[in-house]
Image (cartoon, rainbow, N blue to C red):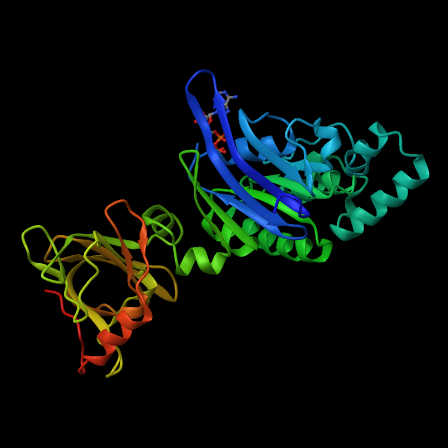
Length: 378
Ligand code: ATP
């Protein structure tokens, strides 16, 4: 694995001072030409890992492999990486052209080649008409494109991006996200992209690595981390899954006072300490007959209109709170009856780890399913 092209971080630990562990044995990787997004809450170690890859920080232990070479202790200049920062870090007195050209000037690249490469990069990033301007005359998105241009002009084999869109307003972020996606595809570059924004992580990454408190929670494709989160943290950080805590008694999932939260015909695995349901997997009313489903009834405490959808906050009689994403206008009363397909349930154990349920478990639920529902909650 470490010999392959791309990035391989192997058991990287970074300790600041005597005790502060910013990274704890983090192993992540991406292949050449792929984008790896590092996502997690503030302080989880994303930037520290990026800086270790760039060579701006040294890991306390572990190894960083870049394109098959052990670069753990190599100078940043030898790594063929380029970094794009959140705050653009442009020279205010220089023109756009001079900002983009600067790394080549430092590398003593001849004038003519510099000019050709600036023209090429400006075309790629749609900055041709802005080359004579100063940064203060640019929009936030244009400034960030100049920052990206300055990184790309060195033709690095790896592009490292630290929250490049976080200074932009919401609408511009969405536009720039799509632009970056397109750019990464066209360049075929290997990119490591730090963000705390789950949408950016899922849309831009070929691989997503979720970090919390200096530890890797899961690395997988966006689809995998979303549909099969490895633990409670990933489940709630990406997509804000509803997590219902309880215990299994007599094969059913109950609150400590034994009232059923979710009563499944097929016995719930005994280790289950939490059932997760995505807000968008909840549907008003019941699913078509024959589908194995969980039906929940609760009191509506708040409805937030999001445009075509509404986010509905519901309190079950067990006291558990849920959010459901429903089509706008669905909720018209104080109580609501919701259903979710049994196949969409996520189970977690007392340590918060995912419990993988066999397809037979779903089938068993389905086999005993008599319409309208197999599962009830009060
Ligand atoms: P954010 O999203 O807020 O930028 P992050 O996930 O990028 O956060 P890091 O900047 O990597 O987090 O920081 C991880 C931990 O390491 C934090 O607890 C931080 O305080 C600590 N840390 C980072 N750099 C240093 C440093 N130079 N000296 C001491 N502690 C540091």
